[in-house]
View 1 (cartoon, rainbow, N blue to C red):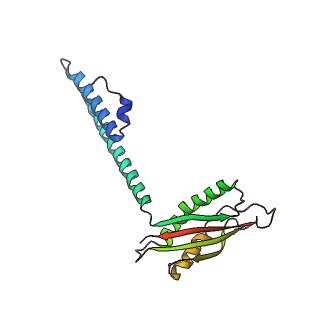
View 2: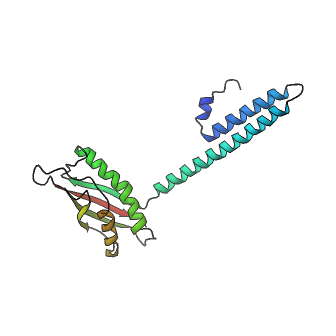
View 3: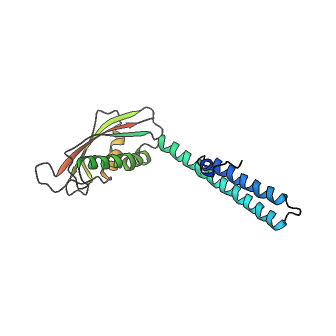
Length: 195
């Protein structure tokens, strides 16, 4: 038992912490019981330490449980959005790769969450899909214009909600125009909604 490595034990997470605290409590109790007359003040302190250890483990387990549940919920998203194209992509946030990465982050986070909450929060009868196109102009503060949905089986009753979500999401704005078409770019995304 003297060869225990606390760092290796703590790598096990809450279970390792619980074991380590219980082991330390055991050592304290064993030392105190070797004395001819155990001191009641030390035994009370050990009891308080053990209670604190248990509370700490319960808090850790709850945190781990909550983290696992949150990750399960985020993985069970019923909406998939994939950026198909964004061109030309000269924006105020930097080079082409940075601009595309920023658009992908906005789609994966803001747009997906808004579509789930506002448009597709009820049970669907079948999977839906479509191709969404929109235009971002310089001077529009990054808000979408000229939206269209193509190659889709999405019912037209959802169109206005989808358009509201995309129109209400701020994307990177194009740079000041130096050449023709630098003042705008098209974005094309694939949209899939699982039932």
